[in-house]
Length: 297
Image (cartoon, rainbow, N blue to C red; front, side, top):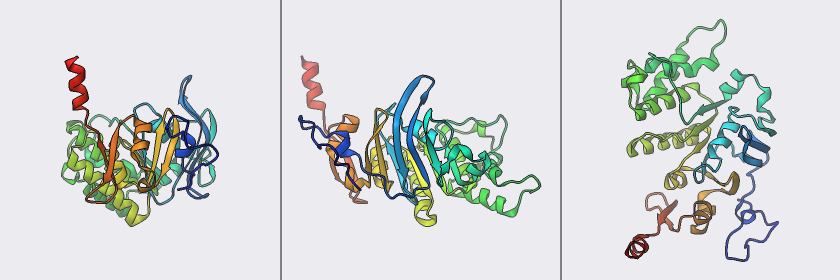
């Protein structure tokens, strides 16, 4: 991690300022980049002049408090949201300049919420992940079938293949959407809160799967997560956001501290080593005594 040293690291009140916490972008040739982008909705600006590189071949996790711009940034990186200024670059070219199908063969997105067509079965929905690979005269191939079967097996939904998506629980549907993304077989995968609706066992399974995809096939993954301990355990690279700005980025072992968590989330905590992985583990400070004193008064 490189540090921005253009300003003092202390604001005079013992607080770490954003210039000190922000790490430099890793390398200079990332496939997916945002350059000086301004993004938002209608007239409301979420991030102004944001620049970030997504490290190639890494599992990047974006963290931050609610409404800080995590999902907005992910939508811009995936071309779902067009910046009002600046640009998102894919392989050195503006992502908006590519045909949609070409982007979809390179970059896949699991959005925060998805709506399946009425009456569609699980296997048919997962098979839609193969659409970017279809050509006008190309029929369904053994390669397509293998991609779908392997994607359903990896996400544990093979036994649901004949079920209607409408009949599934929220957690089951989330795994089906993940299977569709896997079937797309893209080198870059963007996931917006992928553990939503999943119970704890499936959350861990999904993040283990993401980690394996990164390690074994070199895929670049970017996920928005709320659980800090999941983020710090599985990510190679953390991007921490607050109020639409990136205030820290780098390897979790290098940037995570109690001060950083307090600055970004307003959470007093201790950081210890995860006994399983050695990665940073956030332990919130107990507040029961303070609460009891407040209630007694």
